[in-house]
Image (cartoon, rainbow, N blue to C red):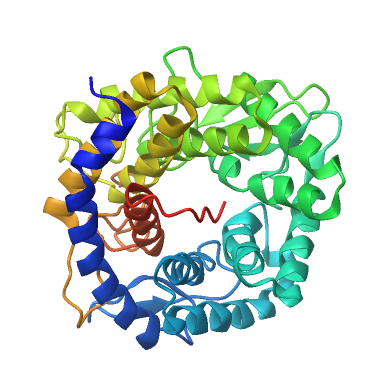
Length: 386
């Protein structure tokens, strides 16, 4: 296996050509959808609008900030700022918000403050951090995912992508309380979500006093005990981000275990990730490109954190995923908002979800975000919105 630098150099031309086409398209999207909070695309190929409280509401603006950081094109900056203003309405509906405030404000307002020093952005990010901080169960040492009575002791692996908001709050305030909560939550999830083979559970219900796992749920996978691929990606990228913020070895080790599992699971399908790595063999193959894009970001950061001769393995895996998806799933037509296709929200269990609830092979905004982020990483862009 070649080392990290050699693999990066060999794939520079791929990253540059991909970014050239991607940038041409995303610039049109940034202008066209500037005043909309978006999630996926409509049947007409243009962005689908959602409420500012929706958990994906920060991705489009953050993608624009990432692109601004690299290109210095003011159109991206204008859209990022417009998205922040649109999200302000969500703060007045705090009962509709939950642990995904990191997805909403950390990568959006946090990124804005890092790039521009805007004090309003800083306030937005810190206010969101206090909301996430307040969801921490002191005895059990975990952050509640959702506000419902039924779900009051549930955690989901997605939360590992939200806790960087807390690390950042500690940095901004010079106060380690926020980071301590993030680490306590991460340590609980290692104990309760990580399986022996390196896979992770999506949803776990906890004992409120001890934090121990009472049971797990299928979540967006195909069954209890299954392996929802985007959940594996959330865990992989989330734990390497915790390592980046804390330098604690256990988070690096955890990310590596999940990465090994993810790569062994995706290799047999030509590096195109299925929705669930343990889906029934007699059912159609359902892909989820968003899992591949997010995992690629995590694999690249993992590769950078390891010695070059070890990191090359994970960078090579990331590139194989990105190349496979770029060939099969990407649309560069500037007339529509459909960039990365074949995203799937959840495994479409027959008789459980309606076709509207379980759309498969669609364009989803966080797929575009992570694909863009991964390509920028291959170009060695220094800005990390997390």
